Length: 155
Image (cartoon, rainbow, N blue to C red; front, side, top):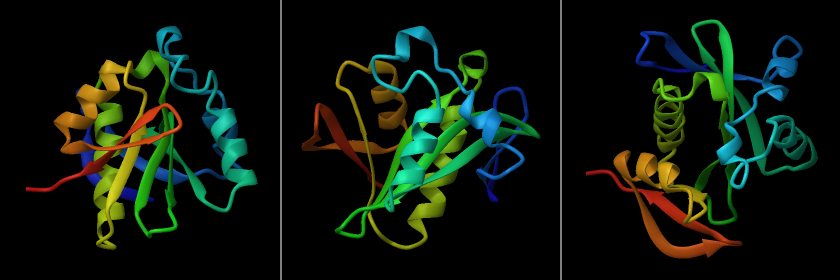
């Protein structure tokens, strides 16, 4: 379990846990809001399959207390940078600070290795851009497919 002791706005403890035999169905069923489907998979199941078929990505279940509320994955690139990807918070759970707590928890955990922390988002996804910018991610000027790459900068 990855635990930074962060809580969402409802006071629930947000943790990241391995996807396992007990929670994979709940993770697979995570669904974003309809207006987000242009930028993220319609079901988190797609990201679970990606991690099963790839040596790069590792899936994690996002929990609020003891309830699965999302999915996020991380990976290591050829340059040893750490990447955050495939984040989906269930539509019913959005707007409560769960996504912010999940990204902060994972970024802090990945940063312990001392490598750059990166993620990408579509330029039209203004909510993701605002969230990541508020957390210290800055666009690098590079693109991956049609997404902007941002790197975590710490003061």
